Length: 228
Image 1 (cartoon, rainbow, N blue to C red):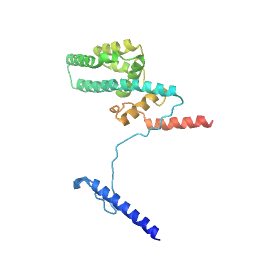
Image 2: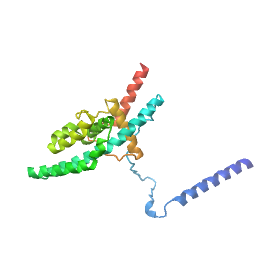
Image 3: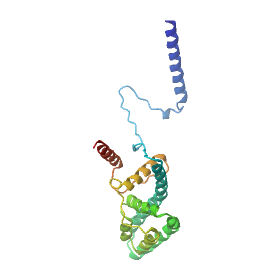
Image 4: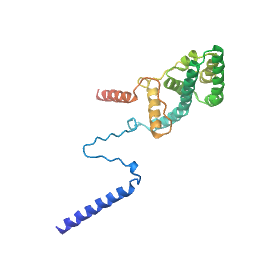
């Protein structure tokens, strides 16, 4: 009985100490407190996040490839993000310019600005990085590199052909489909993890796909194949 009493006193002491530690750690400013009375409904707003399955690799070669490919994606993404921002700015400004001559002049200014900003860096990219960049341009702008060129005048056309097609010798019509193309799925997986880890600054895609749904469907297909 005495032993049980000691245990009880010990538990009371631990609980009291923990309570005191919790009180001591609370902010002194009353504005930082949220008081809830019995019967009150408390609404807590949480930041949006994605649930991504734990990565699984079949071999060391797969791990090496993933790390190698991840570097390529992280290198290419900021340029696609920047291209999207510049295109949005360009299109918004052009909508407010009535004169065709002034529109052409403004396009030339934007072209020179972008060329001076990252043309040299793009030219240093590998062919794989160029392919990823073209796909990410589709992801970030909602249009392929080809259609972006087609929709804007010759100055922009010269820029993209010189720095993309001639450098990488790839198709500017490449699209981004993480729901159907394995490489695109891998790119999206890398991006989502990089966003969550703070490695890359997130910019919403202009394409209509739900990566969480893609993950679930991919998992279901994998389970079906394993069963059959």
